[in-house]
Length: 111
Length: 114
Image (cartoon, rainbow over all chains, first blue to last red; front, side, top):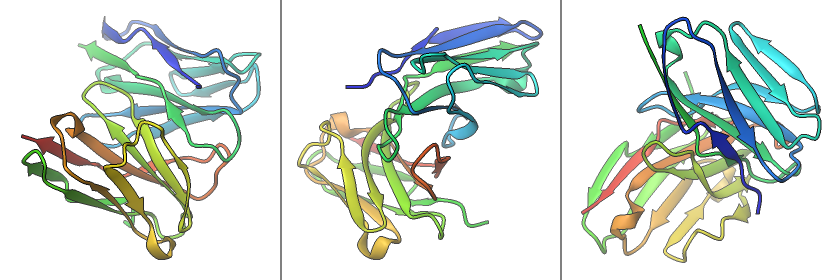
């Protein structure tokens, strides 16, 4: 059974700090996605990574897919209160199988 | 805007009653997914459809849960003989492709079983 473990589960930081969120598995994934969810809304896609070692940047967010395609990280530079939310990684072991989500990292950024 | 629409948004029911949720996906999307989410946790996969065919169903889904997608358009998720442990947010998502495709989520249907 594929399992995605995210750490830390909770993160509370001050505006301007940097942070990294991790997503790990013992399984190899054909692709990994990162979503962000705000209270009362559904998750919204941030990025998809498909190649081992791939690095993608989205403004202050940097996503990395591990060389072995078993893990991923999300780094946020100079966090802002608007970054507050639940960050979820999700992956599919094979093309055509359902997307499985990790339990998420709840981020709180205070000004 | 024709995003994913879910109804009802909130449902409060007594234990033992049946409930049904409806999801209208983005019209050109052939894949439709149901997830369940409890507070502060990630979405838990329940089942998904490609067009009208139910391709995968979680082992966590008891026989009290059933989902349909007649004609490959909207979908319904029915829970029979509800239990307090069924209280959760039920999320629907759709996608236009399977591999590395973005899931577009609705705002969810929140179920409270008393």
